[in-house]
Image (cartoon, rainbow, N blue to C red; front, side, top):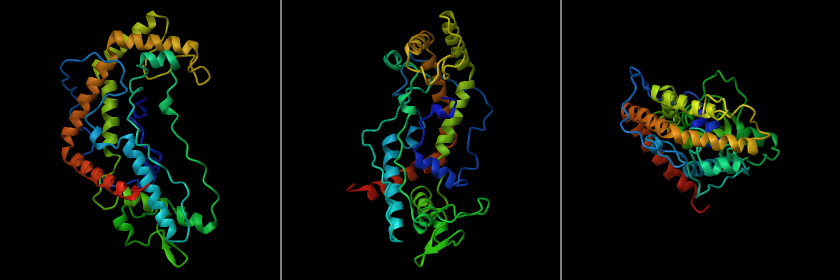
Length: 319
């Protein structure tokens, strides 16, 4: 996220919030691999190094950065529309970046020679973007945006379909019912979980986390990692995990001369041992297995993603 989660592109902030809001959304009963654990066949391993533009079998089921930006923007439109019902406006409107692209540059650790020479172990993608601070809200405005503070153990609607007929955790402002979780939750439900049978949008991400974890523990990746570690050791760098920063490298010197020197050697050893080519090929094999096993669920995910993106495009039309 790499340890396994960081190795995958992170969802935008709204999706992280969504996970908290919608814990318990519909997910397939047989989610995951659930197989015997036998390592998949991989065939010939290509020689690879820079991982930035690599593609994966699960990519079609997970919003890419451009799509995530559009979904963020669409959710803010829904929040604003909800707030307007009560005479308020939502000021923190985000704008999607049409040029945003996926970036797997650090999926297997530093692997771009030019970037290593320029910034060492610094990871520009990890910085992300910060939203501006929220302006102070009047009591009713805050209540409409966030909803009532309720006991988290109490059930709340898990889809917009349920929310429209539920009075659980609701309140009234200006003569109108405020939904459970306020406009923030309503916007998330409308966009990400409109119906009871909606598949949790995190399901394909979880498959990706599983495939990465399995690939990391695969005997062929362990062997390639050991070879890379041995190569680094011969140059005087005691490193066991290609996803870790080297000993002595921290935020204060992550792009300094020492970090650059180690990063350059790191990339060289990855090239000598074809660690990236091996790891990528193995991870793809595990993803393919999960895609095949969960084809019906992922077909639903893909259709629902298409529907979600059409709704987002409608909501954001005209800026």
